[in-house]
Amino acid sequence: MSRRVRSGLFLVAAAVFAFLLIWGLLGLPDFGDYRGPYGDVLQQVALPERHTPQVVGATTFDYRGFDTLGEEFILFAAALGAVVLLRQQRGEEKDEEEEQDHPADRQRRDTSDALRLLGLGLVGPLVVLGLYVIVHGHLTPGGGFQGGVVLASAFVLVHVAGRYLILQRVRPMPLVEITEAGGAAGFVLVGLGGMIAGSTFLFNFLPLGEPGTLLSAGMIPLLNISVGLEVAGAVVLLFSEFLEQWLLRGRGGGA
Amino acid sequence: MMVLQGVLLVLVAVGGTAVVLTRDPLRQAIVVGIFGVLLGVLFFAFQAPDVALSQIVVGSVALPAMIVLTLAKLAQLRGPYE
Amino acid sequence: MSFLPYAVVVWLLLVGLYGIVTSHHLVHLIVCLTVVQSSSYVLLLAIGYRTGAEAPIYKDIPPETPVVDPVVQALTLTDVVVEATVAALLLALAVQAQKRFGTVDPDEIVTLKG
Image 1 (cartoon, chains in turn green, cyan, purple):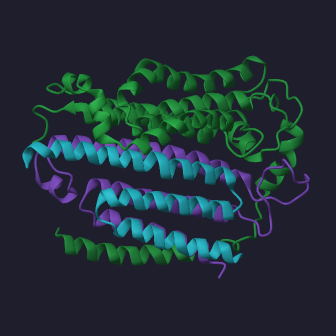
Image 2 (cartoon, rainbow over the protein chains, first blue to last red):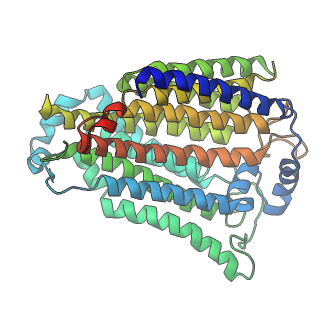
Image 3 (cartoon, rainbow over the protein chains, first blue to last red):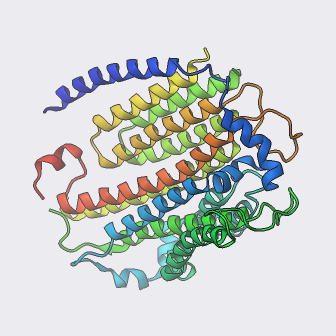
């Protein structure tokens, strides 16, 4: 069907959908009037039971840890899918000369000095910030997911600063893949540890410690670290797949 | 409901419209970065610092970078045909 | 006035869908999908909000203060990271579409046969 017919049909369907959606949303309690019992129970129980002041982190990794396992594997599968889709096809080969010719020339041509300086200067603090956010996930806002992306963005910055060839040495591909897979497996292993300790999967079996200190809340820091590694690995993997696509010179691809 | 939340909600709606109405994907990468920061501030106003942190890092760092890389690769693939 | 968050949710959803339906470029389509996803985040957080409450972190507030719902925040924060990765997967699909069909216009991909 032509574009105009499609737009017209969409507008009609959208009007009906909007009406139904607004009708449904009007049935919700007023904004700000939260009645659910689950949230009330959690906020009273998280500090005494798990010795962690961060209720959201306790929910993500302990009370609803199984959902987080599923989400983590969605991430893993998406990274895997992107790698499979962008693999080197027959007829494409990496332009070897492009990688070796005049790296100094390429930097001078591509990026300004201010950008390079700022980029390289920020890489160190970003790595430290990423590790801090991951490890303090059970004390302050943050955790594995946020800190993992911050850590991965440090690698993005190395590329932006114009040093792609150094990037090859700083993030060798096997190490990135091992990190990602190790993070995913680490989550499952910690969960199995709960089973081995004589109770259910993802049972918090490590000593709980004193709330507010770094070594507290049982296995939640461990789960934070494994999720952080996995997220960082997945984002760096995706990013470098796209970058290598850029370096590939196609021969015979496309219609 | 606070005035701040109301203003931020309206800004988010305007930002979303701007993202859709920007037809050129390269410009859209910048607009989606701004939209991500607006969403992050809205999540702060909703008392959700974890979610805001997630949104700011992902929506303003990872997503625009991947969009720009994809566009560079697409331009390169199209180059020899022009 | 207290319906404003839900109105914004409906608006974002429909505007994103409009962008997807009338898109000329696969990458533009994927970014509009991001807008649709953000409407679901706003809906989740709006449901869990409690007027006058604090963030659910008991680090320096007394343990009896009312806080907003932590469950929807846990759902939303994993959601944000995961859906960005799925968007990256879709961008990889767009690159493959360019390689196979020679175009990233959704209308033309239907008519060209490989």
